[in-house]
Length: 362
Image (cartoon, rainbow, N blue to C red; front, top):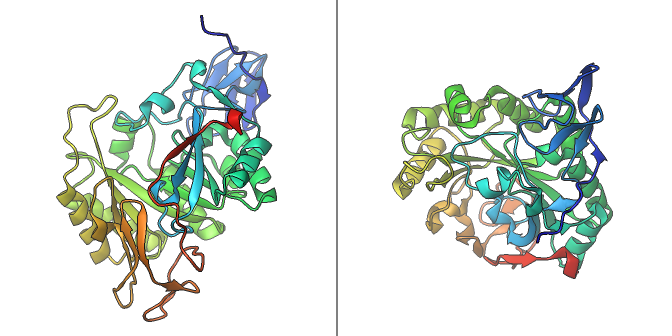
């Protein structure tokens, strides 16, 4: 028989009272209205005794040490290790979710590894990780927990990374990103119909988050778009997406096109052909973006980094393992052109390893 774990009653922020029977969540643009005992769309924020409660604070679906390139972040201390973890639930409803067993979980028994923010930071330090990543499910829904972890990481000189769809309100967004060092924003498509029908969300709040990060913060961020055959992979849409990035964020923001595999409620689609990703990369480069990558396929040449000035390979990648590394003082070692991002004098050596970790054993 399974032991019953009592859910923590951690007071959440970002809500207001509507009347004596209902409160409204103000964390994300869904603005869920909750009667007593009801949970939001994300499933982890609940009205308990007319208060907002975050039911997953201090609990995780698991920890793992990954290469930072797996997030993917190619310009954020390449080759270093990152302690990755998530909780449960999500505030988007993507029919093609690639982590649906975690993000769509409504069973709190999945959250086996319990850890305080201080414990996570100290564990990352002990394991030699350069950063901690909030990933697997969207950290927006556990904003309070993520902020507390980030503050503890700062005390240990550990960076924090958010892997997120960027679906968050302005007030919460300001608090959340004030303590984040790096982010990968999942831009699902450049089409609001796609967001509405396949994610049960809207595009504009995500674009607002991207503009906010670029114009009002020092957060290093990169963008990922999962290309789904017949849904968001047309040359026209990819060109429009690339043009929007160049116009609103500039050419220096890295863009990753990654391959879809059939999953969750979208099992009728084929895997994304490598040729589609390579063609998308060509379109984005032709539109003027400087750093464009393919992912979820083994194609070292389109996963490597090239100097936008001299076009020489400055970071060679084979999957997530680094080879040649030619960056000196944030510049191309060949022509001294500035390279956008955060780079150590020497690359990390974590390689392709993926190492599960139990915090209870630390």
